[in-house]
Length: 441
Image (cartoon, rainbow, N blue to C red):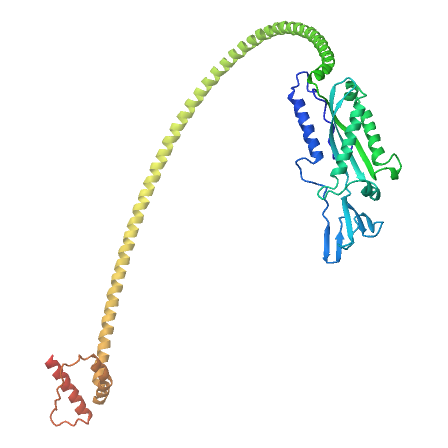
């Protein structure tokens, strides 16, 4: 079986004697759905081939996929111009015709409602896989004219032949033979289909097809009552074997439990006796241990009390010694602190006195320098000539005039017969102007 196909489903009722009837109904519905899918009911065609036609007018080219068979004929010619797998060719629309068929393997699902030799209904589900072996024979003997699914009519014809072969073979077999051994049905179906498709070894007598595989997926008894009756002997036998095995197991388990209980009881009594002896021995040892431990604890507590008293006495003595030493150190420190404070006070007074002397000396020196400066200035002022004073006055006239207030009115005053053209006249005029402005203010 090809790896892409699932394994045959188990026979109905294999889930136990209480298997629900809806499992059979679900299987029957699934068989019908798969059969409808194989017939193309409710599904889009999957065997159509997409062929591209390129070019314009008479100069066209048909491009065929590499996995499709094609036959190209021309008007007036008895033999095809091109035939084969994936053959592309020049095409004249006015005189040429071509047929493209998929070359992939085809799978046909079928549900055959059969009547066995015991006049009981059986539903047999099978599938057939086939491919085109000789397309030169196939296109002449088979109908590939459906543009949407070229394989539809061929699959329909093969399905009808396969269902007829299955029904013929099942009619000669009993229910038990159909359910237990499917190989005769497979062989009969394979022989029938190969005789039709392949011509029983002679290619010119066949249809140019090759049957790849034929398999029976499942066989289901149509009658629920018959199916349950067929299962009853096996279920009864299995129930009897299970009951005997359960009784034997219960007997063995009971004997084992009794022996185990006896061993456990004996072991329990022995353990209790040993435990009693061990408890008494442990109690005596525990008493001795407790008494010795109590004595050791009393002795240890007394020793600890004496040691604690000695430690407390030593601690008090040490504390007193530390207090005395601390008082002595505090006294020494206080005396040293007083001496340091006195020394600091003396040094502070000396520094203040030195600073005062320095300030007095600095004031005295500053006063002397000011007196000397005044004396030098007076000498310089006394030593300056009238011409120098006039030159200095002239040089500072712009500054003096700039700082003068703006007069509200201007009066011209001519002072006694001084010549205004001379320096003495100019100085006299400036002095008069200044005096007049002060008087006006």
